[in-house]
Structures are given as structure tokens and as C-alpha cells.
Image (tube, rainbow, N blue to C red; front, side, top):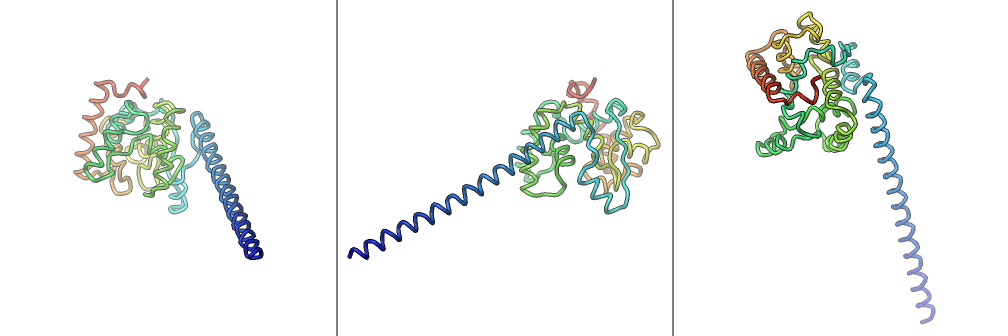
Length: 246
């Protein structure tokens, strides 16, 4: 009996030690994962701070297109050298409440959910985060990262800076990025000299820049451009351009 009791006691001690070792192992893994996550967030925050004053040299999409095509058209210009109507046009087309939210347009998200579609729910701030810090495509991981990083960008960057970066990194055609490149390629003018109609046409192709043409727009693109012109005028009239206009 004494031997049996001793064996039972020994077994319990071994089981307890095994459980303790497993618990310690998972704790170490948890600490490592936490450190990696915190390190990544710190690196992203550092980039956000740097890119608040330094122009992003390249994005994942630009690099991908360069590999695919062998070249890309892109020329960075400060927002002061972009026609104001261009900024108003992209806001009218992509994010009419840009000056009224802090990264997420709750009204647009709710409407998209009720409609059963994600179209129209992504703000310009979210698109900048996706273009500059992440990658294209649909995945829960990318969306979770985008949701985490967007408020950080809104906290550090001004709305004017967000628009400036967007106008320079957005894909505006196959292998074409930014409004300066598409303005010169499609209209033979600098971004500073874009007319309202030209700016509206550029904004009209942004959802599908590889399928829609600025130079030879379809009837659908022309109608969308006309609606964008009206929207840009409304945004200016009701002051929804105050956060990014001089």
C-alpha cells in the first residue's frame, strides 16, 4: 500500500511538473509574439512619423507593377503644384466626408453593410494606409492591419498630407501612379494645370484604373465624371474642403 501511495504521489508530481513546463512554454511563446507585435507596431509608427515629412519612395503596388511591366510612370509633386479641383474631385468621388471623420466613415460603412457590399465604405485615409504600408487584395489580416494603422495615420498626419500622399501614390492607369503622371500622359499638362473636367475624369477612373480610360472614357465614365464635378462644387460650397485647402 505504501508503495502504491508513493507511486501515485510520484505520478502527480511528474504530471504537475509537465503541466508547469507546458505553461511556461506557452508563456514564453506569448511573450515572444507580444514582442514581435509591439516591434512591428513601433516600426510602423516610426514610418508614419517619417512619412509625415518625407515622401514614401515606393509602395508594394508600385514595386509589383514595376516587376510585372518592367517600368512605371510616376512623378511626385507637392500638393501646392496640384490643381485644387483635383483634390476636391477625388474627395467627391471617393470620400465625401473626408474632413468630417477620423479615418472611418461610419455612415458609409453602415450603408455598405445594409446594401450587402463593401463598395464605398473605404475612406481615403484607409486607401492611403493600404497603398503605403500594406498590400492590395482582400484578406482579414490586411483589413485588421488597415483598421489598426489608419487611426495612427490620422493622429500624426494632417488631412492635407493624407490627400497629398493619396494623389501621388494612387494608381491612375496601368503602370501609372499619381495625378502628375496621368495628367501628362493623358492630357499633356501638369497636375497644376488640370481643368475641372480633366480632374473629374481622373477621379472617375480611380476605382478601376486598369479597366477605365482617362483619355478615351466610356459613357459610364463620362457620367460619373459629371457627377463628380457636381460633388466637387458642393464640397467647396458647404466647406467640406476646409481641412485640405489653403
